[in-house]
Image (cartoon, rainbow, N blue to C red; front, side, top):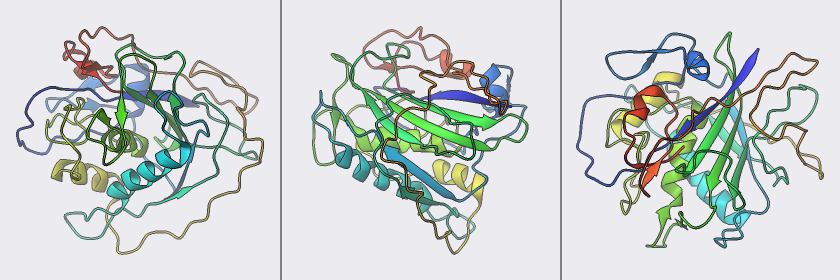
Length: 299
C-alpha cells in the first residue's frame, strides 16, 4: 500500500545561528500522523523514506508561471542547479550520494498525482499554481511524496509552488527582488529525496526561510542528512530519461486524496490545515513545526 505525504518549508525573518547536527528524515508514520517525536525533534517510528533507485527523473509543467513571467525552461535550469547541490555534495566520509537526476519532457498535467500502473508512464513534476492554491493559504511551496508504507521506498514526488496572488513574488537567480526560487526549490528537493525539516536554523532543510538571504550552498547538517540516506560513492549511476508520450496529461487523479486502483495503490495528502498567521509564515506539515505558528511557512 502507498500513501502520499505533503512536505512543507517555513519562512523566518531572523538570524540563522550555527548549531549541532539536527537533520530529520521523513518516515512512513508521518503520513498518518502516528509518529512520536523524539528528543531531537525528529519523528520516531515507521520506515525511513528513500528512493530505491539512484536514477531519478523530473519534469516541468509546461506553463511555468504566467503571472510571474517564469517560463518552464527558466524553472528547469533552477531545478537542475538545485538538485545538483544535493547530488554533487561531498559526504564527510568521502564520495557523493550515488544519485543522478535526468530531466524529462515538459508535461501538461498540473496536479500532483501518482500513476499506479507500472506499465505506464509516471512523472515527478515541478509546477506553479497561478490559479487557486489547494493547500494552506500561508504555504509557499508543497512537495507531495508517495511512498510504500511497508518499506519506505519513495515512488513519486511532485512539487507545487504557490504563485497565487497577491502574497508571493519569486525571483530567478540574479534578481535581487522577491523570494529566492533557487532556495525554495533546493529545500523542496530535500523533501523530494526523503528529508524532513531540520531543527537547525542554518540548514537549507530548516522549516522556515529567511527573506533576503540568498542560498550559498548546503550546510553541514544538510550534507549529513542526504549522506545518511544514500551514503557516498566515487561514481554516480549513468541514467537515461524515459521518453514521455506527447500527450502527457494527467492520469486521472486530480488531488492527493484517497484513491484505490486495481493495483491496490492508495495516495493521500498528509498536511493539516494551516493555523499560521502573518504574511511571512509558510505551512508546516509535521507536529513539531506546528508550534512555530506565527510566521509564514513553506511546504
